[in-house]
Every structure is written in C-alpha cells, then in structure tokens.
Image 1 (cartoon, rainbow, N blue to C red):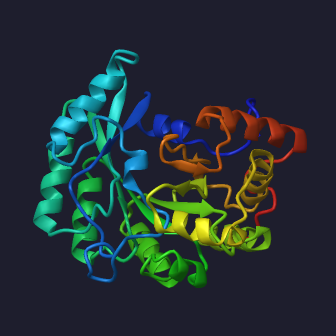
Image 2: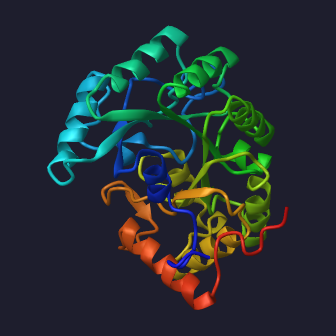
Length: 309
C-alpha cells in the first residue's frame, strides 16, 4: 500500500497520471438516438431512462458540438484556469450513425481549444469494426475512452429493462475494443428489479473477467416519465430500493470483489429533484464517496480484497 491509504483506484488520479493536470469531462448531446428508440430493435428506450436527468444547461442537441464544448469550458475555466477537458459524448447512443457523421462530431469537439480527448458513451450492440478501426487510429493521436452501458450481467434483467441486447453482446464489444488498444469503460446499475445481494456479488466477479479500464456504478433511481416509474407505481413490491447505509455496504462488498486494476469513476447518480421519485438520500456525490471511504476504513478493506483470478 502507498503512504496514502488505498481504498480504490480513483478516476481523477487516473486522468492525472495521463495528462499531469486536472481534467474535466464536458457532457455533450450530439443529436444521436438509440436503436431501441427508433424502431430498429425496439421502441421507448430502456425502461429506466430519461436523458433529461443528466443533461447540464449548456448541453443541448440543437447547438453545435463545438459550441456546447465552449459553453461547458467557460463554466469551469474561471475556477481552474489550467484545467484541460474531455469531450464526453453522453446522451443516447454516440456510435449510432454513419461513420462520416460520427467522425465529424468527434473531430469537431477535438478542435476546441483545451480539449485533450474524447469519451464516447454507447451500447455494446452499436460498435461496428470499421468504427473501431477509426477509433484505434484516433487513439494513437489523442485520448479516447469508449464507455459501454452494460447495466447488468443477467440476461433476464436486460430483457426486463428493454436493453435490446444480452450480456454476451457486451462481452464481445468490450473484448473487441480492448483488443484494439482502446481504453474501455463500463456502466452498471445496482439494484435493478430482481437483482438481490447474491446476484450483485456474482456480477462483480463476472465483470472482473472483462478487460476494462474504468467502471461506473450507480444506484437504481426511479425517474418521472419512465416506464419503470409506471411499473413501480403499479407493483412497488417488485422493487427493493436501497437506503443510504445499505447502499454503502453493498458498494463496498461489490468493490471488494472487483479486479483491483479497474479505475472506479463513480458510485452514484444524482438526478434533479424535479425528476426523482426515489430514493432521495440528500447527499452529493462527493459526500457519498467520503462516506464510502470512511466505512472502508472502519471495515479495514479495499478494492479487490476478495478478488479471485
């Protein structure tokens, strides 16, 4: 262990090791959609999803990507003049378009002064090999991270939440991307209907087999305007929402089983109160991280303590 107590690999430290300075992601909406919204594989999107809950005020699909980047940078620049920025293509599926249109959006963002790379949020079933070849070439020139929404490793859950792909699809996408030398991230939701503690601990072990660079975790949130909110109103007994203390314990149990090399970017999502039905813990993300570290200290534990190759 280092002089400073190790609890888990932190995303900020990972970026600092690459860039040597503070780096901020700027969320972008490049105007894409999803194959389970436009009818290619389904309609209505994932049952839990309302993209309005994570779009900052400067992030608007009617604005050019470069303008969104500049607006986002101006929001942070006065606090940290030396900061650098990553263009985070977050809203919907950011690899779901023609190759030429995708290249145009990515490269528009990279031309903005202060932008040092891109992060692309997408689905495992939307990564053609020709795009991977382009991203591998781009990564040889600048930073590229591809982040896949995996959400669950259980096919029954994935079907229930209308993901439109199975876990094998996620494994294939992650492995193909990593094989191209591109850093790979994954996103997982803890507490989806039907997934109890034992399922989540097994999930941590399955996820740890993947060649991931980064991992995001967050609690299931019930959001107004989603199909899952309607399901909750009709059958609340189908849901076991975490209270704060239980979530902290579950996250730590999960992290203990994770590959110790993974970089953990996030433990929670924080939706605007006007959209959030439950759970409402009343803590900010940085406060939650502090609570997790404090509890890990009390439990004398760390990321990967129970990890088995």
